[in-house]
Length: 258
Image (tube, rainbow, N blue to C red):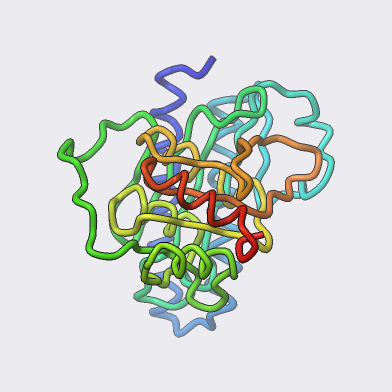
């Protein structure tokens, strides 16, 4: 069972990794480094920090990281009840294009395959959203004039376009998966629909945070999102305002969404 300390740890680690990444980006930019150097060094250093920290703080737990070797079957987490799933730098492209802010750090804990703890840092915004934090702003978020569907700035999926068209929505372009999901959490967007390929580390922490805020989270077919599978490929998800879930899922199950 996740403890209050688990929530505190996730938030602290995501925030600290984000601060490290900001320092790395500032230093490399001052040295006129290439974008590829920013991406590689950011990934490597944030991964090392998170892995070392979890080894020190939660030595009995397994870890799945995008930057680690566990891209397939990982014996260390096979059958483990508590598995931390991390993405040290979600949105490497955006990170390497300063001053872009739409990149993130993900730290999540799953128990028996379900996300119970999560933190998503948006370092360039100075914000970390976490399952253990109090919800900022208790007033209801007003319904916008038009539904806002957040999508990739380079390859919006057909399913997201179908939802926007069916529900009279507008598209909001953004970078990383974490930034998109947190846009819904923060009230900057209403629906995030993704298809075409993600892995567990891309969405575990964002899903944990979104669910803790009362948002709907699921696969495109409405089934639950589960984690710590032998194959971490998890290609699709929906994060949206709870009152929109039925309409969004109905669109996705129709001829244009399927």
